[in-house]
Image: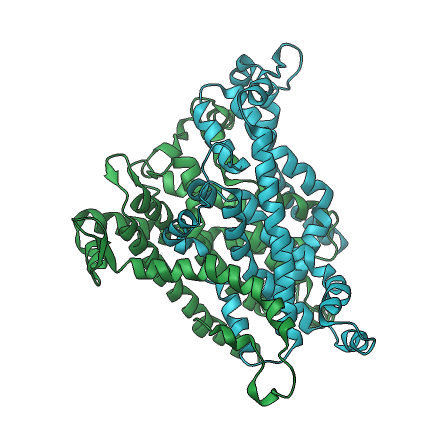
Length: 278
Length: 319
């Protein structure tokens, strides 16, 4: 019996390690080759970048020929501001919907989470007209507004589910202490929802950071490109210079990788916790 | 769908209390941004699909003429049928390959005796976080006949003769793109299944074990029925994702023309071209809106099926 258990444990690890290799191999190949000379990239794709094979030319051309720092700044601004707005406005709406009884409460609640099922992309045609009419074409503001609208339904849904499970006692005692409804939200409710903020943040952040559709359509201009769009267009221009392409890919991967390794535990705990609620 | 804005206010019967402005303040920012930038554009797109450009400039109401054109004119009908069918294939492959793999990996990860589960979890979710542009290009390089990683590797295990430039062949491009998408996105169903599995109470599983069930039987007879609601959720998320988000990966790998010869054209790329035009074909806002509206109805059918068919049946099953 013990032998059988052990055997099956080995089998399980073999399967899991197999998928691990499949998940990591492509990234490994890219980062490895980005540090190699053109000859070594083609001669020995799986060789280590040592001795003659080593070259950082690719990185040099990425950093000199392109606006990657600018693209990163744009992506950070768009993702950061959208996320902040989604979290704040989402928590405010969820608080109003779960805390107060008023006419139309259920209806507004349903209306606000409708967007989970109906992707905002379906309105792209009219959205572009609207953005142009507002004079927001080729601005980061356009992206921020659209991503905020896109992220709110999920945020409101998760926050509401969570707030419904929280007891009213704390809020009521704050009310007895004479706190205004605004201060109750800021000082009682906001700290209360902290555990689900990670969940909401992850669900909202990934599609914003990786989105290609809206940057391509709403703000393809030189100065407002996000990393995703920037890398896509850089690759288009430099298809012959493999070193530069591989370096550009690595530059796009590494920050995400570093952040992920640091925050993966909270992140995954957030996802699994959120999924349980939903 | 729309709600009168004064609905936020105090009901009449509670009129002795002052208007609770704070409710309005809490709801307004979310409701306004969401209405203006999400709901209005969708409704407006539906409306635009009933209009068309007129010869003298400007536009006029044409009823369902755009839809008749979409289904009737050979050019539009062919492209639409092709994109729709490719989406169906994409969806079927995700349901039959991605979701079973996700379920299997989640089942293994959730075993209580497994060591290193946290590390595996972290790694399995990593590709999901990467930008489609990166993922698309990475796989293009790896599968490239020029670079030779795949041909060389296949040579090494004696399968060298089987190598083909899969992304460039009409017969295999769609399947290859789909497998790349599965590689990237398997992390999402995996996490949802995993969360459902680790939340099954230990006593339930223990009871089954005492009844003499083995690991395999416990999974199929005890755990699987309990996570059916998650399966339904994964199904509808896969459906929505395939019809809308599949644009990104295909555009990143095959470009707006979704080649070779439209072999990887999906509703998303079709919508993009209808709207913006490509090469000699001019973009048409109204046909773009029509394609988007069709996509809206397709998603509505899926969501409706899920809400009224799948979910209701699952609830009955549970009780």
